Length: 395
Image 1 (cartoon, one colour):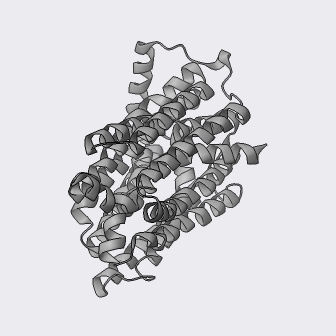
Image 2 (cartoon, one colour):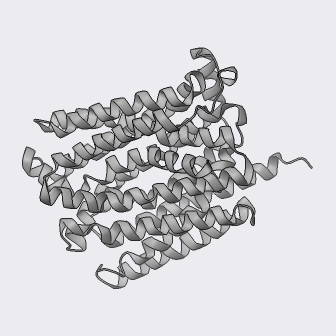
Image 3 (tube, rainbow, N blue to C red):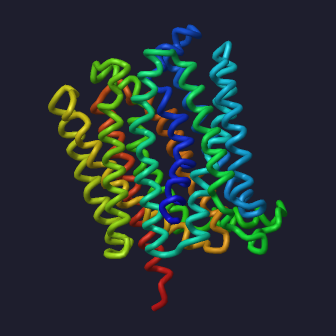
């Protein structure tokens, strides 16, 4: 039963990454189709990410009031509709509008998936399930750009959005038939706007929760930086063709899959703090190696991507316990807390991918410094959260 739940939640979490990564190899083709600059085409990613982050604020709360399944099903229906619209887009403006709708609809699975885990499990078992979800969902960003590259070469960029629509439809059928409701009606919160706003404010004012959420988002920013820069990094820096995105994404994602598997295995063996500190130590080693390599050599495979494998491996060890430590502060509002946590992390992801990446993606060394900067910010937030916990501990 846990295996089926893990696969379903991983599939739901894949919806967003597939919409981000699958069409990256098509940036040049979309630019030619609409006679648009690379910076303008980058905005098809940016508007998706910002609306994706914005709607994450509300999915958890909506699911706390109306149930997990109904909210997921409605969001998937909108996602399928937006994907079909993007496939038929006659202009860049139309494509941007469909990407906005895709972004609004794509985040339900990842937010509500965490809440479902919190509904059904606790402690080390919850960490284990969350790690398994990350491990399976990590296949999506690895496969997506490779699949997108082949779809682009053989059928063109519109076929990519047809694929996204088909995947969304598949997940609708799976949820309808195989995902039971995890939040009984008796445990749901009435949909009162004043009470909801008060709960949001309570979560937003919780210092440890905010610091832990930013710690996850900032460390994940290194991952976001290379995703946002993928088209330029692969084609212009590594001088590889559109079908060679695997050189970037397989190291990134295989590190995430292996790290998530170990995080799940170690959940009952080591404390959350031990796993987090181990993850930070390895991330620091990877970020430093990335800077040193790119300062001394011109970026080339495989050496330019090996530090990324180690970084994503370490990140996946630290992320599940970091996320759960934040969510554990609000056991009675897990959906709302998951929404706020996801919003903070995706907002940082969107800022890095849409704003920071275009400033750095012309240089492999600049990208390496960007990863290191995000890691330093993450570590500072983690240390501040520890100091705050120590100050509040009883004497």
